[in-house]
Image (cartoon, rainbow over all chains, first blue to last red; front, side, top):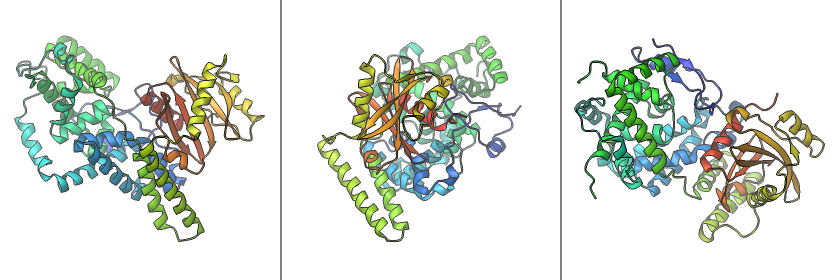
Length: 223
Length: 254
C-alpha cells in the first residue's frame, strides 16, 4: 500500500530526482501511497563557493520567503526583517544544503526565524503544538455534512480583504500549511520538509485548514 | 458521521487527489468514490471553490524593492569578514559601499536616469518586437540556433529545449549591451515572446538595483557559473520566473 512513485508533476515544472529514502521511512505505513514530485536541485552545487551557492539556492526564492514571512508575522515590515535575518542564517548554513528542494530548505529557515521572532516580540501570538492538539480534538471531522458549510456559489462572492483576514486568523500550524500549499504551490513533501512534520500531519492540517477557512468565509459577514 | 464511506481518511484522500498527490491507482479509486458518495463530492467541490478563490482573488505579493539588494549587501558583509584583509577585500568593500549607496539612493529618488543593462535589454526586446522578425535566426531546433552564434561571437550560449514545458524556442539574435555583442535566445509561451540574453557576470552593481519591471515588461535576472542571464517578457512575472527556473534546471543540449 505504501509504495511511493517518484514522478514529475504539474507539467514537469520541476526536474531532477533526489533520494526519498528518509521521507518514505517517515511516512506512516497506513497512509495511502502518494505521488511525490521530484524537486529541482541546482546544477553543480557541490563545486560552488558559498556566495555562488547562495545566489543559486536562496536568491531565486526571495519572493516566496517574503510571502511566507508576511503570512506568519502578519505585516510587511516584520516580514522584511525576518527574511533578511533568515537569509543571513541561510548563508551561514549554506554548506548544510545537500540538494533537494532549495525552496523548501529556505522556507524552513524562514519559518523558524519567523517563529523565534514572534516568540521574542509577540509571545502571546504563538500557538504551541500542545494548544493545537486541543484545537484539533475539538475540531469536528472536516467531512461531516452536519457542519454548516457554505454553498460554493457563496464562496465565489468573497472579496480579497475578507479572504485575507480569514486566512490570517487561522491558527499558525493550519495557516502555514494552507499558505504553503494553496498560495505558494508547494507539494506535500516540500511542506513536510518545511514544517518539519510527517506527510500524514500535513494532510490532516491541510484538510482542517481548508475546512475552517470555508466555514469562516461562509459565516455571517462582519461588515 | 452520517455516511460510513466518507471517513476521515477518505476526506484526506479527496484533498490529496485534488492536489495531484495520489498515484494513478489511488487517484482512480478515489475518483470513483467521489462519484458515488455525495459527501465526498461536496468536499471536493468546496476544495476546488476555495482554491479558485485564493488563486483569483488573493493578490500575489512580491518582495519589496530593495530587499534583495539589502540581502546581498549583508551577505557580502559576511564574506568580507571571512577573508583576509587585502587589496581585494578593500576593493570589495568599496564596491559594497557603492552597492549600498546606489541602491538606497535608488529607493529615494527612483530608478537612475542613466541606461542600465536591464533598460538596454528591454529596449532591445521592444525593438525586436517591432521588427518584422524578432530574431536573426529563426529555428526551433537548438542544433541550428547554437551553431549560428558560433561564427559571430567567441562563445555560443547555453541553449535548452523547453518545448515540452510549453516554452518552445523560436530563434536567436545578437543584442548589443554597451559595446559588447550578447547572444539572445527567443522563446515563446502562448503568444508572448521571451528574450533571454547571456553575458559574462559583471560587477554585481546591476543586480543590486535591477528593477523587476521596466515599462511594463517583467525582468528576471540570475547568474549561473559566471554567466549572467536576463529574461525579459510581457509574460506574467510568476510565469517568467517559472521559465527561469526551468531554464536553470534543464540540462543543456547534448
